[in-house]
Length: 302
Image (tube, helix red, strand yellow):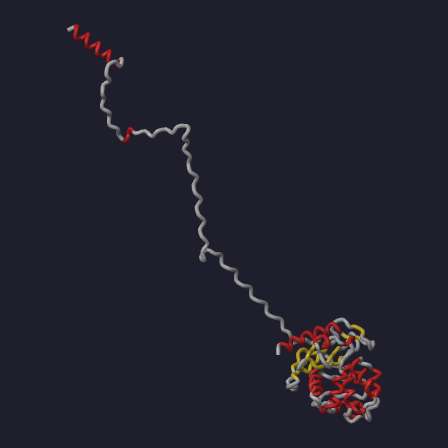
């Protein structure tokens, strides 16, 4: 009994010291609750990935900002002189001279030097019987100077040669071309009232060879070519024959002539600055240039 107990003690001590063959032990089964996630070593650092930026939404037709509504176009300004009471224009097609258009108005329509054309016409009618070939050299020069330079002494010399009443002779010329309202005096023809409507009718008749005679009309038209110093107004828009009239800064400045296929006339009742001309009188050059430009636009719109 004591020997057996001692042998048992010796066997236990040998096992505790690892002596002899190791005992084979059955591995305990692992369970999910006993699994452990290995801790990474210092050489393998786990980094958290940065979140990817969210893609911007694509712009589609539905996401575009609406285009601003177009602004309404301003209404074009009228190109004529309708309603104007200090300026006026008139025109008529040479092929239809009865169709006269008048725009604007003026309180007075004194003829001033446009009346020189009437004096020359009455002179040709009464002195040389409508035949310019009968003119003397001096008379030709007087006509040319009266209509190109607006030379007063020349036109007075011609008027003084008209037999009887110069006013009656001039009025007869006007009646012959259908003007039943204009009346010319024997003196100071520049102060007579001659509307732009009637001036347009006269210029159309002159162009058509109906003033005095065809030869007389042609002679007048040829002479109605103002000197360069007077080629403002209608001259600035390419007028052929034309004649102007003026006096002072407080009076009318006017012109009548042919522009393209139209008989035309413009007038201002003293609007704008007045510029002294070669004859010593003053004309509203700036305003006449403006009126000529308005007339040009009106004719282009026909």
